[in-house]
Length: 205
Image (cartoon, rainbow, N blue to C red; front, side, top):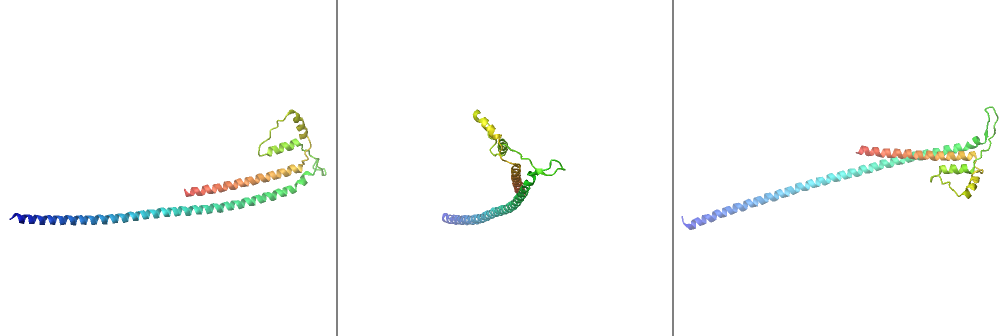
């Protein structure tokens, strides 16, 4: 066989190998890009599913928060209504008590069998009124130290008749008791509201 024939056969074999290699590369490239696109689509689908999942969770959390807010608002409104009713009842009861003050501060019986007599006037000095007001003051009891020259005058003023009568003292006590009952009712309603909020949060956890 001549050298030319061998060369021709070698070229044919090389061409065949080259074509086969190109075909394999093309097939590999097609498979690669097909796999890439399939993987990309799968990844996009997972991302979309994850986004939907978090969006659903966020929407659920918002709806739950709004529902809890509505419940708390309704509960607060109900407690406020109860508090208003209690304060109104306290005011009515205080007015009724004040209407009875004159009956219990004007006459008395020295003994069970004795007839009614005018109640002796009870004198409340200026010093008594000062101490009474100081005890009820929100800023504490004021200092009593004073220069020697004014101390005697202050003592004399405190011994004077203040003009306050038993009815005034009793009316003041009725007012103070009403305020105390109002504050107690407010505190109880606040405790009820806080307890309800903590109960809802505990159930949510």
